[in-house]
Length: 237
Image (cartoon, rainbow, N blue to C red; front, side, top):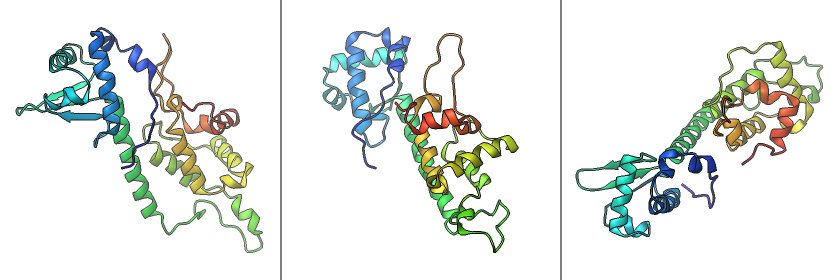
């Protein structure tokens, strides 16, 4: 698996984690080094080693590492596992969860492509054009169900579509017809994949006091103002 050189850092995770902020400064410094190591570890989000190796990796003394382990047990800002043979595993919840979600997403995409590899951009959920129709009219037929299925496949963490009435069909049909580039299933797969990179749309941003956590829904995404903000990068990072 290729390792990206950078990742999003969730400042609210760091500053609003009361258990982490209650620990001693040395513990927070060791944890920051651990997060950097986890990003490049074989299992992203986890760091495993002995009590002799880990202090060297994390730039601390064995005594400081023991204090770190005590803090991690009393103020569980991370998942901590210690085996009977003395191996220690540290896990960052968000990084580990996101990596698992990406792997599951990759597997789902592979299964989807394998299942539909002979479909091309067929519009079998739309009445086929007559023989007199022009080739340009074929591209304006929007494969509604296939795009909704892609939403479920690429973004399983987000709200599933339960009803697809005429109002929602009209929104999708309009977005499809506005730009020829959008008239392929591949464009919509990539578009939904881009939404995964937007923390606000994925519900990864902590809401303010008294407010509910926001997660994007497909009808909301398809409204013109929201759609334009997404493709112009307003929700990125």
